[in-house]
Length: 315
Image (cartoon, rainbow, N blue to C red; front, side, top):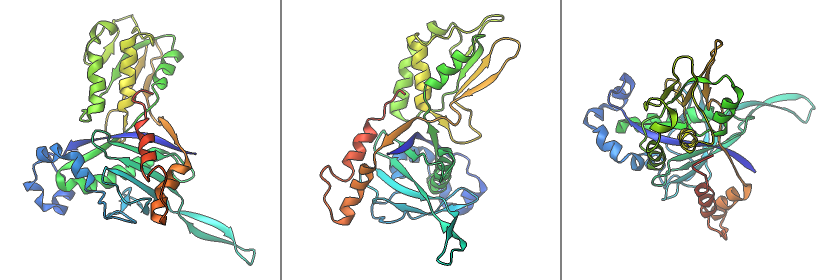
């Protein structure tokens, strides 16, 4: 059984390219960012050509280190990509002379990219012996993809979904209550997320007794009324958890909470916390069967797609 952290990805226009982009892609001045944004998912799909068999036509890197990858299967026409991403490490073993020697080891994690229309999800295998945290892999993917998308004046941001339980657990830890709670929603251009958020706003004003800029601030000497049984407050927390935490360090994190009382604490929700889904090994075994000349009873990707489609929008 493998465990995967769930990420969403959303696109942004590059309106002011930096020197590196301008030097690498001198044709940038002829690219219309709005037109590229209109075809954002299609352009992202060009990063995964279906004719690729073993590797993709670029190198994954973090800015300090390069990472070897291998395609588990060629990218599918419907937008499913599965790769193994290795992290080179120094291994140790005993040779035939019973002497210790070092060797290069290449353990890997699996990465599943779901670029089907309207999905925009990435699943990153959680395996701390390879990468300490899924967010390290997310940074590598985001940096690598953005170097390729820059020619289209586009960039992508990965958002890690986190358990909504994190928010309510923090509420329960602080009987003194909260002076302020801020929900930082990013610009949403993924329909399945924006639909969930739009539904919330219908009744939000009357439930929190606060402003509607999503910075809920209690009156002086008072605390916010936060109740998990309140359907609209519950819906807002769920929307935020599903939207996720941005990968970039310079972006504002998802939920900011400031406790009441004299010893005010500043708390961020969702940091280093992930929605984890299990996927059995037989799903990946089935993916390899066609390459070995063996017919899979359930089809090569159908079993994986069924698993992807069962990822809940609330967690």
